[in-house]
Length: 494
Figure 1 (spheres, rainbow, N blue to C red):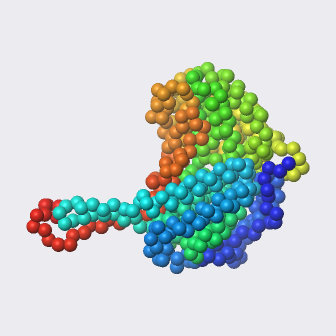
Figure 2: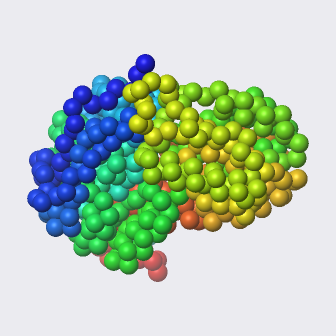
Figure 3: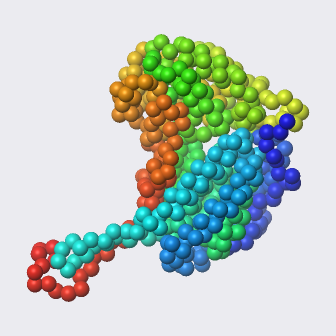
């Protein structure tokens, strides 16, 4: 039985610079291992700061002609890219799954979400043409959106296609040239996207890829020619990127980690709630910023909790839930489970040691769904982002107590309430600090054109990464006031 099609040969990744695939000089090559099998499926160069500068230099000549091109012409390239990606969807889904540990269905869903952002970017040719108004007799004011210039996106391992596609379709359509720095753990999908961008006909240097680790990230952040940056990853690194970039006058939006709360009221629909909670904390093996990792049980919801455990226990690791990114992550999660137990939590479902049957998966990185009950708000399992399929249950007597638990978190990414009461739902919508709120929805990701983004330690910078508020990240407004002749009937404004 096979859950995913691995690449037939080891893929050697290269940087995409000036429309050419180049191996950075002297770069160390890092093995890329599939979380499913632990086998090497690719090798990626760790680009130095000098190598990053070469990619930026190769992008510079493309900027003037690309930003001068009318937006309706720029979108024609994106139309072709979208068509090519749809044709190649199955191969790309398997490739993204093979290196990230997602199931193929999850990887496919991520690609489709990326296509939604493409469609939003394509709509900009009709939606964002600026504004023009006669403000007084003979005087007009207008604003024009102008691209920032050379911009970059730094993306995480858990969504190899979707998160880059949150960034470059909008950024490029607005007239910037874009440099993608994917996680060194998942470079294969980024290279496949680069191949499609080349096939779509984007001019050399408009879309670039630079591979690497911390040195490459820091080089992008400090380089004076990079005018705007988007980042998605852990809160610690997001804060670092934001501080370093904004201190240099760059436009920066850095999305960090999360500790999302799923609040269950006593009147919640049992079947809807149980399945939504399981899907939320086990989807992508819990390796997503939208995973519901803390369940706040209000009053007597014991039957729903029992059903959640039952459903999660039936989930088959492999076909039903993917793998953990690497062995270090598995060890970190297992240590967190042990620590929670030592602090008084009860392990009601233990996923340690769970793995698919078959020799092919023996060296993969696995952890089954794990549920911790009787967790206190001060425990590490309730406070720290674990980033795995681990659900912590906190029991509280009232909705007010549940809101206090949620709002005590430094993160502010997402929260959901499960209830059949409109009044209860509205109290949570108004009372939580999270930037994205769900009502009877376990993963409250906004669909386009609504924007994605949290608050608190989950977001550093202003605006959101998608939707209308993303336009201010990738552009600056130029305001023009015009007067052509003197007017005898003018007011003080003339």
